[in-house]
Each structure stands twice: as C-alpha cells, then as structure tokens.
Length: 215
Image (cartoon, rainbow, N blue to C red; front, side, top):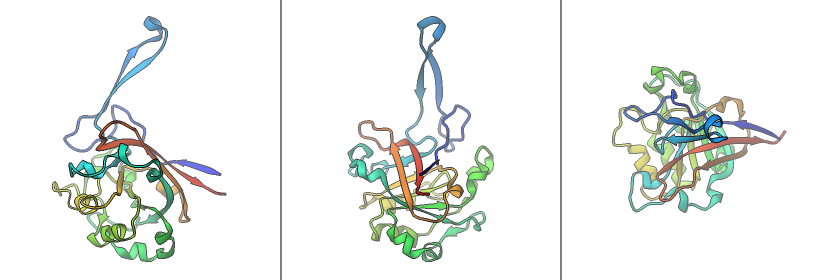
C-alpha cells in the first residue's frame, strides 16, 4: 500500500482566494511559560486544500457535518488535463478518454498542472475549468465529488459561481479545491479519502486529502 498526501500545508504565507484574509497561527501557550505549546488557529472555512458543501451557496442545502462519513471516502480517478493552457476548459473528451474508469469512480479529480503556480500571482490567473457538460456528467452519474488542483471550480472572473450553483442546486456533491501532487497518483482507480474538519453547520472546511494506492 502507498499513501500520497494531496494536501497543502496551512501557513500564514499561503495563497488564499483574493479578498480573503490569510490564516493566523498564533502561539497561545509556550513551553517556557505554560509547560506546553498550543496554537490559536484563525482562518476562513475555505482555506487551503478544502471542501465546499452545497450549503455554501444555498441556505436550505446540505452541510458538511450532515453528510454520512461514507461521503468522504470512495473510488477516485485522476484525469490528466495538463495539456490545457490559460483559459481553456476541461471538456467531456478528457472523461471520454478514460470513460470506463471514470464511470466506476466516485470522485473525479482533474490534474491540470496548475499547481506548479502555487505561491505565485499566476495561480489566481486564467486557470483551466470544467464545462457545463462535465458538470452534468457528474450530476447524472451521482458522483460523490469533484476535485481540482486550482483555486476554484469556476473561473476567477465568475463572481456568480455558476458551475458551483449548477452542481449544488439539487445534488449532494462536494467540491474540492487546491489539491496537490495529483500528478503522482497515476491513472488507475485508487481509494480517495478527503476528511473535512467537522464543525456545526459547515459550509466548507479544510481537509486532509490522501490517495491510497494498492501496489
């Protein structure tokens, strides 16, 4: 068994969505004063490698803490879209190329290669994003979730979050953003685990995402 960590480390200097405050990691207790170390962590619920719930956009929809735990573990497939350039879209052709595996998978993860820009201004540029047809495929096939190695499911210019709304309006699906190391996973089905921080009425949460490969 091989386990690959797909999660970005939370730090005060990490990239965050434009207009959002970065995390604050304050040492609240010290070895010298208190005999132990404890950190006060302050951050938004959609920081770093994180998961969006349907309630993120619709007040009557499902919160992360209301999902059964099985929602966060399932068969995953990484689909390579690394040939895409700025502003180009992830079309159904990428899924069709691996259709049999994609149909089996519960989580569809798109490796655009955009993670190479992590920590630079380019990360917030015109990254690749999915078409409406891909969103419809996810809905029609009752996928548990979609994940990408970019900062958003929608293009950075879409303040309405059109694709999020399409997925969340009636479907209990989760969206995972800012994944890392998808290129290390390969193209076979694997076990994907993405466990969100469990807090009340969660609209989103940082996750620890891992790929478990059978060798």
